[in-house]
Structure formats: C-alpha cells, structure tokens
Length: 311
Image (cartoon, rainbow, N blue to C red):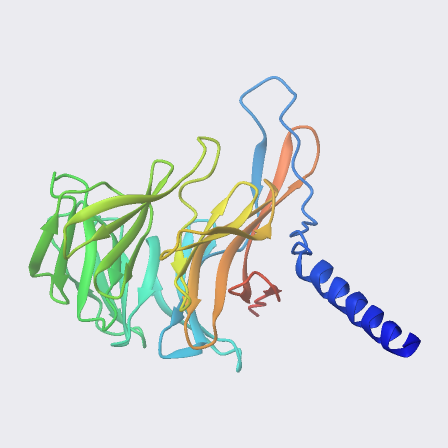
C-alpha cells in the first residue's frame, strides 16, 4: 500500500513540474546595445563622421543565396557591386548614384532607381543598362514573384502606384500614398511604409488597410521583408519586430537602440536568412559621433548575426 502511495506521489510531482515548465515565459530578447546620449551642447546636434567606406542597400540573388548585390559609397564615388559570399569574388556592375535599393529579379535583371527619377534595368553581368520609364518622378521599383511585372509609385500623380510590364508599359494603377519601401507578396498584396504606418494594398479588391502603426518617434524608412512563414519584419527604434500578416501577432525579434540601426533588409526564402545594412554609431566626444555602415546576415528569427566581410 505504501509503495502504491509513493508511486502516485511521484506521478503528481512529475505532473506539477510539467505544468510549471509549460507556464514558463519565453526568455526576453536581451540587447548589448549602448545608446548614444542626447546632445547636451549648444547647436543643432552631433556632428556625424562617416566611415571612408559605406556599405549600403544589399539585395539577394533570388536564384542563388550565395550571391548578393550592394552599393558601396566612398565619398562621391558610388558603385553597385555583385559579391559571392562563398568565393569572395566581386564585380562592379555600375558606377554612379543609385537611389533606394536595387532589386534582383528571378529573370536575372536588376532594377535600379537613378538620379533622373526613372526606373532602369541592368543584367546581372553589368550589361544592357535599359531605361524602363522616361517621364521621371518614378520611385521604389519592386518585382512581382515571377519578375515579369514591376510595381512603383509616381510622385507627381494622384494615381500613385503603377504596375507595368518589364518594358514599362502600364498595366494598372492605384490611388495610394508614396512609400519608403514596397514589398509585393504573392502577386496580390503590396505592403509598404508611409508616415508611421505599415499598409497592405490588395490589388484584387483594391482595398488598403493599416496593419501596424508606429509611434511618432520611431524610424519609418528602414525597410521591410516578408519571410516564407508570412512574417513581415521591420525595425523600430528599440529593435527588429515581426508581424504575422495572417493573425497580426507582433513579436520582438532583436532588441537594439539608437547606436545600432538596421535598415534596407533583403530576404532569401531558400536559406531563410536576412541581410541588413547596419549603422553603428560611436560617441567620439561631446560633439562628434562616428558612423560605420556595414552588412550583417542573420536568421529570420534574429539569431546568428554575422558581419559580411567584403575584401
């Protein structure tokens, strides 16, 4: 009888341990980021000193995650570089100023926004630079899933968003808002950021909805990506967040602060990784802050962050 009673006591203890462990909260996301203090001197603010090489606006090859493109800025000298993460081979594809983020399509053409405010395309080997639009005022080009259509917005017209074929022939238009970055998802949904909101435009129903609202202190132009798990990742002043586009659940992915800012992400569905342009701010003295811009790759859940060293 005593043995039987001890047996049931042990069972109850095991059940209790299981219940306690199942109720345990997830470990909080811890940051090693040391914030830059508010400016205390007379004047308008800190003097920001840029590093001599400024790595910016990366984009994955959608067919081969070992290849990326990015812009490197050295003073007034800007270049579009193709880089192999395995072989470390790099190639200059274009020299000149590029606005916003270049977009590599599955058709092996790269979309560029150049200073004439038109959309251009370039083969991934650097050949055949081609102007797609001609009137000017066009920004933020983005491929659809199959890279046979492009979405972009026009700053001069009420019909802000346009969908065209790869030759620039307009197929459709939508009255909407200018945006800081566009993501075309499953050929039917267009996500974008504008004035402290993330919007979703359904091009079939032609309806627009707000899926997330920032505070007025948060950055709004850091860019967005959508993972294969339908999580839209974006950056606020205190970290990288994800919002599931189906159930709208918001989660902190990676904690950060004003001295470590993530922007212009690019995502590979093949390896489920994201590359960010990361700005690191370091306080030099009471008036000066140094700024380094580098490329970092991480898993889509925010773990495994590593710098991409470009020789």
